[in-house]
Length: 77
View (tube, rainbow, N blue to C red):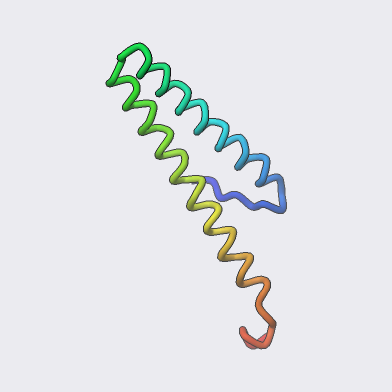
């Protein structure tokens, strides 16, 4: 898994990842329209995996941002 760093082009990478999620969902909807249920489920599972990965990266960045924003005296520097 690549780690997103929002300060170094990470936002653009995250946006691309989320656009991939949207494409997986669009493909799932098309599969449903065609009643290709196995295909629709496969597309949805891919979207879920991509979304889970993006979510972890956002949470990681949020927790690191929280640590950087704390006063220095909290970590003994």
